[in-house]
Image 1 (cartoon, rainbow, N blue to C red):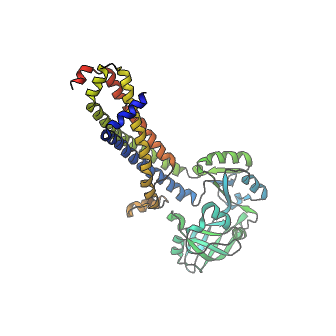
Image 2: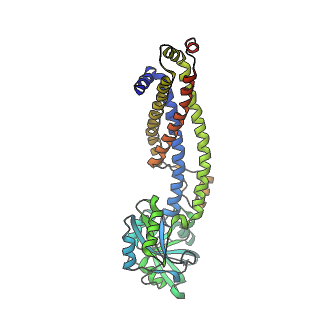
Image 3: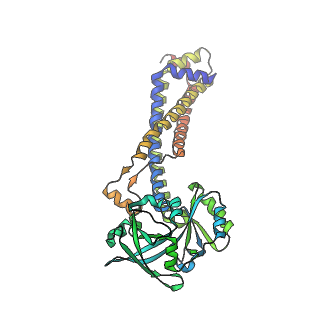
Length: 404
């Protein structure tokens, strides 16, 4: 009965209800947009610095991460493949050889990161083929290379030219080879683009004398949120002799950066919630002021104050829930627009973003949890505010209210 009375009271004064719901609607849209952009920036950071190259998790030989030499490479055999493939939560995995070499053109040289990849598996893992801005992708059996656009500009090389790699191989052997440049790739991180060279895995094994061995295996989980669980399970499956690391362990500075920024965001969100609270509280006060005479009459004819308080509480509760739901729906097209049309950062902000290895854009996330979380928070705020009219109605004097 209380819910029925509350519902009828809401639509008895459609303008007042619309104003109250509008305040909650704009509060949800504003808070959702702000949090969506912040979480989107974090996703961009992880994708640019982790997902595009490092991967969400990696398998190394024990001790490789602390001493990244080819001597600490691991045997990549069918037994290891079967153990990794037995984890259903892993979407794909790709073996790599990562080492440094001196990259040279006709007259210029530069220290570079040489990465031997399985071209087909790398497409599944990091979609490397989508980063080609000129030329074509690699084939597993050709003596060719992909190089970063920054490195290509520095060495003055183009598609069809030859790049020479000179370095140190397995157990101190010399490593030297020349490769035709098939394509030029571009990463969100300018530092990576200035030094990266990709060659087929078989060619890298021949170059460094690592037949049957790799330095690391990059893992792509079905759901990045469960990377930690996958890492723990693989550690048990593989046993001693292997290090399985998540991206949080491989890039602790990125984790610290995100956590620090997130805490700063909570301060701004707290200020925003305070503004939202006063806005909703103002509309509730307006509702109480308009209906003082009505409340006095209801009490005078025998309605108990507590029951009346419950009716008004449910009114605010219904308005809050409806406003939060509509706000959540209203925020979706706004966030979707900016997701499809990211905001390009200005020159100063662009340089700062690139220094951190990020793409210079602001793009919100469309994760459902962001929308639901903000709607719930604003609805809770409104419900807490609804306690005030409940207390006021319990304490009110019917005669005073009827004379108002």
